[in-house]
Image (tube, rainbow, N blue to C red; front, top):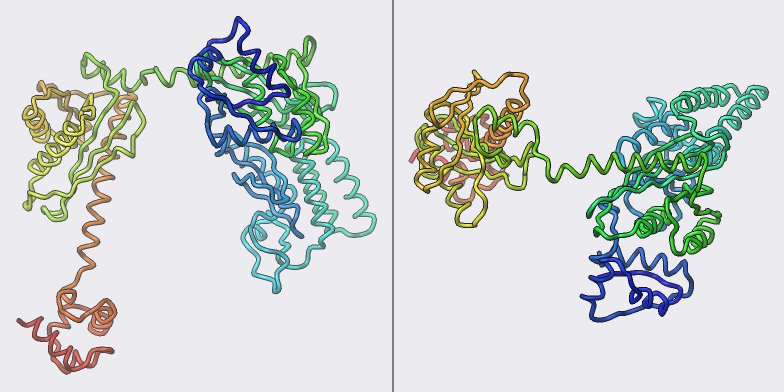
Length: 568
């Protein structure tokens, strides 16, 4: 139910019995029947154990970071002779260092792109050095990799580039700029012009990146500002990463909490889930409210990362202002995620207005039929909730009872099977049904739903004219600029694509079949040799027994059997 750590277990449990206690503690006390504990050798060990147990057991009353296992990091394999950098979600300790986590795929791509452009570190998984040089890859040809696989890059120079990448990702751009400029002039004076040109390009690219970073503080100390916003069971944390006075990143984290969860517990979750893994640690972490044991986290980071990180609550001045700014951003993000659970999308609202429906259609099903002259006939059902496709609920049908080219009868079969299955499984019927076609398809759909005594809004949507046919005889034209029409087109096109994909699959499977498959003893290998020898079925039919016997792997006995079967 709940996992926590404490220096003094007795005092921790005693705090649960003192009044007043939060509603969450009341629920824990009401439901808990037992307590278990593990003694560790240090507070830092307890911190690691707590993090691992929460991830494994997912206790109901702990704050959990949503999708914390899915956030990617940038990994630098510093243990290799020629280290590589690439995105990873594997946090197992192997000697590499990690930067992140990156909550935005865009920010990760930007960081990795800057590393490739400025420092040209390799991103491949080759084991270097190679015994023989390989053909250079596209990244080398595009000047996005130094190409250590070619065997002409000194190890000490490449290591120097790795250290510069670490400094760059740690936000030390001012220091790095001075170092690169210094080395550029040294290379120039020693007439190593090739290296000087490379360092010059790095310097210019680094300065371009620095131009885009906003200056927030006057001093150069590295700090992280954590802003928290929560409402009900949702909470958001925004982390402003400030390095050398500049904002280099803004990371967003979404949490699942109970309504009575205190902010300090959310902050502890952030410290435990994020800062215990990343290499990029600031000198200070600024938080909005005190936590119970900040020294535990500081001791852990000092022990594991050899870096003293202070955890503070600013009271006034510039730091307080930036912390409030982080909180404001968290509140904005919280407002973005909250309405998604209750909000009715605008396209669905417009659809209800244009169709004069008493209820806004949120669950919409689209139906389409695909066949060629009645052959390989298929049907499809796609399901949209609001404006989002529910792909796990898509269904496709192989037409079983109709052999002739009759779209109406095929649609009738698909709809009847669909409605019957939904009712048998006690699953919800759609709020609106969209059939591909005109008045004929509409009447078929209405007939099927009437058989099951279900009165549902059904809409036919013609492809060529974008005309909508409604069950009361209305022909409706929704304005081209309307989001409702765009939604209907998405549903119709999804149903068509889903049906025709299955139709092509059936047709392809049928085309692969051959009359030779029906002859006993003719396997895939012999069939291929026969078709390759004669080129077509017509030439095979015109061949004699002697001609067939000349095919590789086909003797006279098989040739006679094939000839008799083809001319039976």
